[in-house]
Amino acid sequence: MLIGLLFVLIVQVSDMFVLNPVMYADSFNACVDCSAWEHGYIPKRHHVCVTPPLPLPLPQATAAEEAERHLNGTTYAARKLAGSCNVFRGKWVYDASYPLYDFSTCPFIDDEFNCLKYKRPDQMYLKYRWQPFSCNLPRFNGVAFLEKFRGKNIMFVGDSLSLNMWESLSCMIHSSVPNARTSLIRRDGLAEVAFLDYGVRLLLYRTPYLVDLENQKVGRVLKLDSIRNGDFWRGMDVLIFNTWHWWTHTKSSQPWDYIEEGGKLYKDMNRLIAYYKGLTTWARWVNRNVDHSKTKVFFQGISPTHYEGRDWNEPLKSCKSETQPYFGIRYPAGTPLASVVVNKVLSRIKKPVYLLDITQLSQYRKDAHPTYYSLHNGLDCSHWCLPGLPDTWNLLLYAALFS
Image (tube, rainbow, N blue to C red):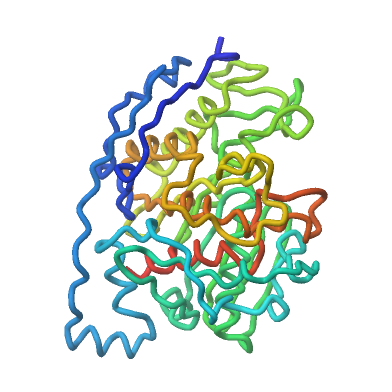
């Protein structure tokens, strides 16, 4: 019954769609009832009305805090940032000191992201730094990061965009301690970079949907109401979740044959409805299994693609040959509907989850994809070069962790 239903959401998103950087369950209010989605009904009109806390001026550091800043190598701004301004609203500015690391000295970059290894001719895309309108992001300090998380485990959970971000963070830390002992382990679905002198483990658990994908007699089944693999996520000190990229795949690129919910099989389903149901299952898992006094939980926001130039008012173009960001204030394509789903699910979650709201700042970066300069087969306007945009995602993660 769900096949063919239209997901027509007229979303009024401009400056009012500015989310508080710390997205807790009780801090997001939207005037729409998504509970009907669970039964296959989709509203014809959808208005998101968010009332964020007003930004506060940056408070002055005390003498004790300034002394601590010099001792621990991080910045006062990093600790105070999340409560003071919306770090996800800003602009891209040229910075001659970028990139944050040298691709040739980082041992963790896969060929699908290694644009300079594959001779990308332009390098201006490496020189842009994200500048929030109301504050400054801290400079990344890999030693401070390792000291703060000494003996701890940080896990990225998701698809190849989680891989993109995991490799970026590994390189950023490695550039601060190039002579530190490290280990790299990869096995089916799980990878780990360990900084052995600090006991810090950066783990990656590959799961494109977060919910289970199983081989059954009828074929490959995407189970919207099941997360058995969550046992691997327990006991982490930081969890960064991500999913969306694979929900849109169809036909031969679709890795499942059926969708299952409530014991019933469906040949297909409106993908936004399926996404909502799957994310709701993930939120239920977080509520039941995460001890927020021990584990910080993040959700990596929707990473945009740039295959369609009409998204930035150049309909004949794609990410191919793009060498500069989009410099307008409002991105013409607006907020992706998947972001509306994410925000609604996070508004209902009971445990604290921080939304890394990377969508708009990433929409501007039509120039930052591998295009043809990688091992990827064909044009890639989905993933991101390293060094590159995911380094900014990790700067935002860093600011949140130190705030």
